[in-house]
Length: 339
Image (cartoon, rainbow, N blue to C red; front, top):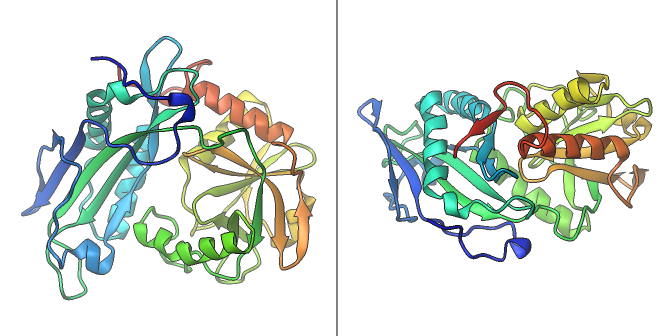
């Protein structure tokens, strides 16, 4: 076994086939043990529930190679718990949380040669997903499912350095009140595609969605939670029942309070308060924090700095990345050693 010969420094953020992927099936009320396979293709009935009624959920996390040569991943137990909640909301059978973590470990071990070297800025992206696979015509849940995991090496999200993003306040809704905004279902992302393409065509990087009920409070973007830093360096995140509970965002709030000694707060944030903050960032698995330089609210511009990441945001980013790479001690349970 030897590390793959790849130009890691020029690796993009896209799919590359690796050696093995994990597959488990649900039938007659129980999950199979699951196994590793080489074939990356999936054969489905033309009336499979996932194709007709979008009954599918997914997760995303990463594995890293540390300075000491170990391979670790970050808080997979929280991904397992979030997928379980997504499954319950979508009337899908829960893949056992302990088996989820075991499957992640098994899949990464089987593809250890694809984990990028320490210091390359690259990582191994891990995509667990679960979907209804049997034929369904009437609108109802499937009775058979597949749980799968594939992995692929990805380069740093910001190639060529960090560039602060420009967001617009969207006129579209991301999630309905009492809907599915708090789970990681494929349908939520499908609903955002029209709006994100439209934003790009209008010169914006992303949409910032207000709450759908009153359209007066900040929620999140199409693919990331948002955080703010006040002028007195308090880290603030929006509170809402229709926001996806980002693992990165929750981890950053712990970093802010326990590592940086900053005050933190999760609360409703009125759109009218946006101009009072000193910094803004989007948080998620892919980039950890993407700095936001400007928010445009129907012609009104709110600027946080378009040249670089803000000082508090940068400290949050560097500290969490150091924890993920095992360069500084992590809170108990945050790092899962694989090899």
